Amino acid sequence: MVITDAEGYVLMLNDRYSQFLKLDKSQVIGRKVDDVVPNTRIPIVLATGKPEISKQHVYGNGLKSIVHRIPLFNEEGKVEGCLGIVVFDSMEDLKQLAQVNQVLHHKLSEYQNEIRSIFKAKYSFDQIMGQSAIIKRTKELAKRLAHSKANILIIGESGSGKELWAHAIHQESDRADNAFVSINCGAIPENLLESELFGYEEGAFTGAKKGGKLGKFQLANGGTLFLDEIGDMPLMMQVKILRVLQEREVERVGGREAEKVDVRIIAATHRNLEQMVKDGTFREDLYYRLNVLALQLPALREHAEDILLLIQHFVTEYCNHAEIVKRFAPEAIEALCNYSWPGNIRELSALVERLLVSVDSEEVSVKDLPANIYLIGKPKHQDSTCTLDRALEEVELDLIKKALFIAHHSKTEAARILGIPRTRLYRKIEQYGLENLASKK
Image (tube, rainbow, N blue to C red):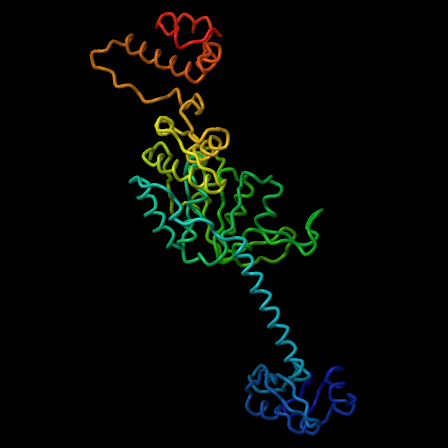
């Protein structure tokens, strides 16, 4: 570095520039700069007042360097001197830096591609099964929401497929090529949730990894962050999430500087957030930030006409994976279609897989179903002239027959299924003349 006055006389130079010129400072200070460096352009900058940034300069010995020449002005706006800086001693230094930069850029691209491959949406709208009118309407709405830039709140009962819908929305959006990162807010202990979401610096706490760790927000930068079960998030963490949504920046645990992030939020819950706001267990300002666009998912009982399609899908999927051939008997399918499925699609999927694994025969029959599903059956259409007592008797008779069938005619087991004492079942068997259906046990 060298500084001259308005006339081009050297006022100061640092040790590094003195070594670069191979001259002692005393040989340079007080002399005209163009006497020291004959082809310098500092006099031109002093005359024009225009800076020259990152320009190539060839010294008398043929050495090529990259330099800055910056005019210095006084309070009246007149040129008072010039600052000269050698940025790179030689073009070789610049080439080496460019090569290092290229390698780093290549590595960065590899890491970004790796993040995208690890954190990518797995499902699309094509994989959401259902031909019912309500599912078709929900898909159409979800696709419209996907093309918006606003946050989305998915509301639905447990097991209704909220995460699957979040994946599909990301796949449909203009962020599809970037990361889809998810976190279950209710599954992570409160003391770990902050570092999971925002990351941490090295040494931020006991056990912190060397070099620190990226949080979910940083991993999702440019893409989508899915906050599952947002209703389970502690109030203190809700405040920090709100700040990120407002400022579009995060600060790591143990960090001092905020990092800008570009993340779209899709949140999901099975809870009534409006009621939680009234109860003071969920922040009202955060609720409105998240609930810009809302998607209400139907419970399985609201599109029961899709149950058969779902059963067929799960059977095909599992049998292909396990390389087996199995099927459900028509009566079993009818019973499954008549069940209300409080656990929704997750419950249906789990039961189908369990039955395919546990049943030895190639066909899953109605007697293989859990009693709570089989005993529900189809409601009988009673004649309008039927008395209440007669209707109750028919229902009771039907339940006892089904229980005996499931229990393989064991009265003890049938009584257990029905939840009544054996003596009471014995009386009912005699009352309805069912002795031929019951064993002696």
